[in-house]
Amino acid sequence: MSKGWRWFLLAVLVVWTVFALQWTDLGCDYPEAYLAVLRFGTPEGLEFLPACAG
Image (cartoon, rainbow, N blue to C red; front, top):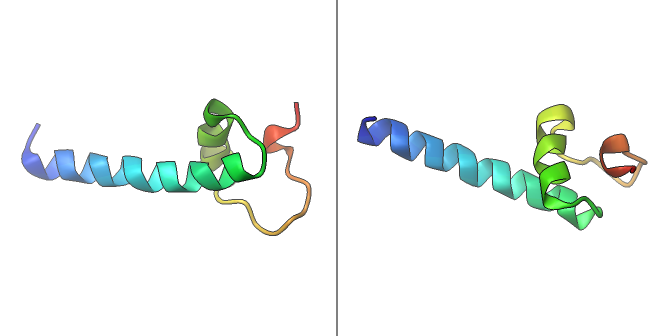
């Protein structure tokens, strides 16, 4: 794997983690938070979101 791809994948992981931390602030566990980023994107507002209802 070239250096460029490593930096790109690292940047994607960092951005994904930042978005997942927003979900953990709403009460999700870490695995749920990472999946919520893939399913719903970032949380918006205070409306009920089904990502962590369970």
